[in-house]
Amino acid sequence: MAEKAVQRETVLSLRETIAQIENRRLPGIVRAAKAADPAGFRRKRGEAPRNKVLPLGVPELDDVLDGGLPLEGMTEIRNAETRDAGAAAGFVTALAVLCQRMKKEKGHLAPILWISQTLASREAGLPYAPGLKSYGLDIERFLFVSVRTVKDALWIAEAALSVPVFAAVILEIRGNPDCLALSESRRLHVRARTGGVPLLVFRQAGEEEASSAFFRLQIKPAFAGERPLPDGSMLCGSIGHPAFHVLVEKSRAYASADIFLEWNAHDRRFYPIEQHQSVAPPADGQPANSVDPFSASVGRSSGADSMGRLLAFARAS
Image (cartoon, rainbow, N blue to C red; front, top):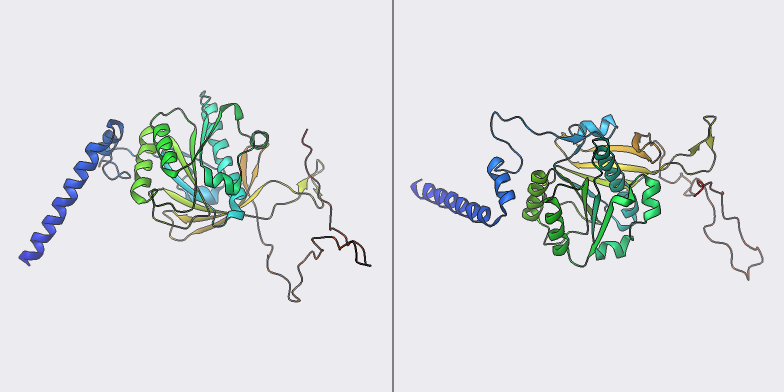
């Protein structure tokens, strides 16, 4: 028993020494934050907690997120496959629009900073300014940075979070790099809490892993509804607002949430939607709308087949 007690005291002493060394190496602003909040999450007893959140307008999602998107700290948004990167990017952009609008309502014209790893932008593409504008973002206050390595992206993110002038900072990375492990995510989280800036870590084609983020959301594309007409009816065959399938993977809730919502760029807000359509094929093995995706070869006697239904898009101007 005495030997175990000595070993335990040794381990505790080493932990305290390591914590002191790490604390001395941190910049003064982070050291002050750690002194007020040693764990990075808890606050001193008797002190009123700072629970600054941005409600997203969907009660089911806001309840899971303890009121809304945290405005001081890190939130992770990921897509499991590269083909879902467009949906995840649309969801992240919608969150940025909400953050920017909140700042504007308070009289601050704060910009959005999007930091992208070069590998991520090569796989999923770059943000398109006219598209961001139609999505509701103020592109005159939008800064995009493309860097080659994840370490460079982390350095820029830490520097940006130390200057509380941004409405939100988006850190886009590819996969699960070793240089963004639990300790690095905790460092970013402390920076974001100290600077009072929401940090959105956008992980492309990444797996679930331990991080210091308040919440982790997996985004998948969902079926969009049809476009409404002025008389209240729906335009058959049209494509409506962007729709998302949100899986809340990390939260304080007992079980993960499964939520469907759409983004209305005109109203600049989310709306809940119902998704009861089954994506499974019918019993005969044929899809619900069976059409040939390609026209027939020129040499065939049957000629070209129909390409399917026509879709109505909104006018660009």
